[in-house]
Length: 167
Image 1 (spheres, rainbow, N blue to C red):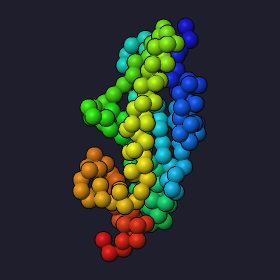
Image 2 (cartoon, rainbow, N blue to C red):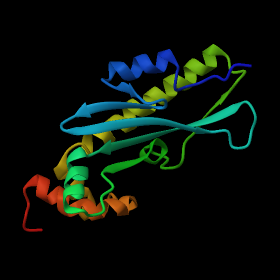
Image 3 (cartoon, rainbow, N blue to C red):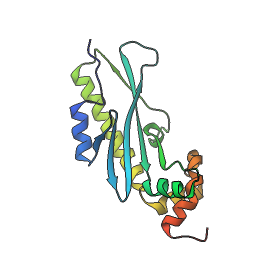
Image 4 (cartoon, rainbow, N blue to C red):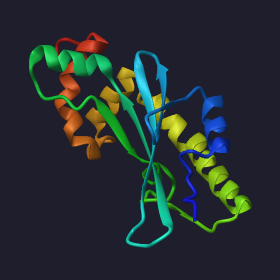
C-alpha cells in the first residue's frame, strides 16, 4: 500500500507556490522576504499507529543577519523564531491532521484545503509580523514572545539591527 503524503501533494505545493514559497528539502518550503527566510515545514509522526501520519505545520522566520552577527561575536544565537500552527489559531493548542493510507483523494483534498486555510489565516500574518525587526523587539519586550525564551539572547542583536544601540 502506497503511503499518502501531504508533503509531496501537488495540490498543496501549487497553493504554496502561489504564495511565493519554494520547496526546501523534503518536508519544507521557504520564501525570502525583507532579508529573512520565512519557513513552513510539514512535520509528522505515526503516533505508534500503522499506515497513519499525523501532520503538523511548523512556521518560522530565520534571520541570517542575526546568525552572522552571533558568529562574529562568538555568542549563542538561535536565529529563528517559530511555532507550530495550532498555537496561532483561536484554540491555541497543538493541531494535527490525520492522513491514513486508505484516505480517499476527496478527503485528502479537504485536509489540504484546511491546512492551506490555516496557513493563509494564521501562518502568513505571523510570518509577516516577525519579518519586521521592530515587531520582534516590541513583542519580546512586552512578553508576547515569552515562549521564545532562547530568542531573548538575540534581543541585543535585534536592537543593533534596528539601530537602537543604547539598549
